[in-house]
Length: 144
Ligand code: NI
Image (cartoon, rainbow, N blue to C red; front, side, top):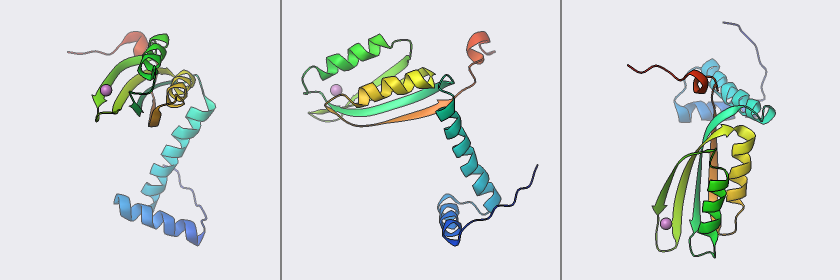
């Protein structure tokens, strides 16, 4: 374990205090470690586009928008190497929610996600990326 001393403004300290209260942290070091971990993971994804990840892409779209469902299906087939699974939920008379589980290099996953999210008729969406160690894919893991 190493120690580091950091300086922070009163404003930042107050914000940190509010974060700790909301998340139930009673130890400032622990809260800062958790935040730094998130930041480091985020930075890693930004600087290493080839890193392997799993991701969920969720989006709501209007299935009445002309040809949209067809275009979205075509996009998924074009990138079938990234798709692991898709869940489709008919939300109401107009809207569908689709959740796609993806796996591949971060850059390719992001590219696919922004192509989908930029389609006209896709109302809102969110991509959540989790970096993974690519090695397990090569040798699998044991089940007994
Ligand atoms: Ni539907």
